Image (cartoon, rainbow, N blue to C red; front, side, top):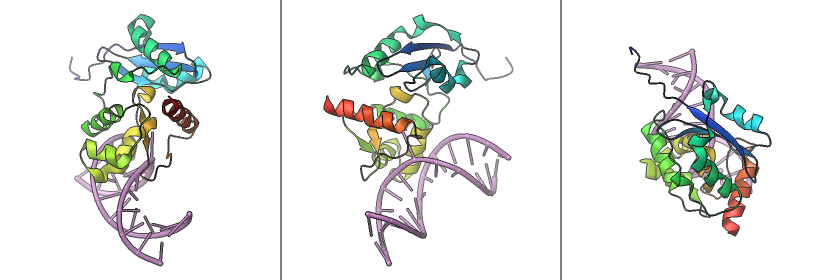
Length: 174
DNA sequence: GAAGAGTTGTACT
DNA sequence: AGTACAACTCTTC
């Protein structure tokens, strides 16, 4: 008990969606880490590998999250913000940025500047971008709805860019 | 349209 | 505590 590092019991789950396999890792407070839809469950798990290490496979604990994410990937207008997320490991700025990002309605896009302003400082657009970059909650935080001020689809780590475009198209077409 | 400078925040050493 | 890095935005050529 000397350490104040409270290791909460983590549980993970992997399931197949219309877009691919998604892995979720969560604790008592909510989802701690989530992966993007991948071609194979192995890849999805690899995305959350640092968290899965030591976690227990408990699909029952993420039954609602699985249902929501599955519906979302199928094109259903579900509200992913219903899924509880645990951002205790992140800084207040990140938390605010993610919260603001979840506040963006489906089909709409906001700029990093807007996100930064919601988080506290409009000048912190770069920091806001980093908040999205370090976002561990993938689909749960609609970071794909955040674009640059000029409207260009920036960043998204490469492999996520096509997915971002696809998600935007799906939401916009809806 | 393209290039360069400026600011803020996080992570690592 | 200081340094390095980042998915930005704005001003100027």
